[in-house]
Image 1 (cartoon, rainbow, N blue to C red):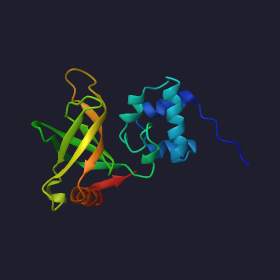
Image 2: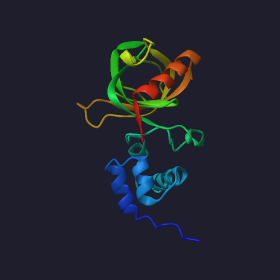
Image 3: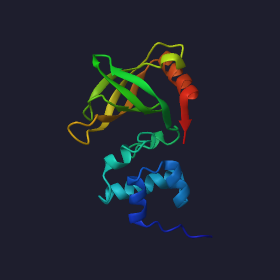
Length: 178
């Protein structure tokens, strides 16, 4: 029986901050998805890294440190700019940065953690649907400086069957899985 590999804290912290994906971290450190989640949670609990550092990585929400129910849903990176806006504030248009059946990462829409929004994604020529609409709750939000675009992570809290099917179809067509 082999003993688990010892992970140097400074090394994994550097890799997280350098933007390595979950897949790259798991491969480099010989971790399962559960092991990576546990490792990141320990770093957050020990206040070595901030929770936002984990969430704002390119794949922030499917391995949500607050929820065991998300483990099985893959994250998807978008290879295109996908417009999104708040149904109540159409002028607040942004871009989806990554997507899953459980949530979206958004750039350009100001939000506050805990805030509930009705988000509208415009799948453009990649879908028969003109839009995909869902209710979402902001899990994290930040703006690195006063002139930087805001970024936020939203958990989908309610979506119609029709829109969910369209979201699934869209994900299959336009994303690159890690």
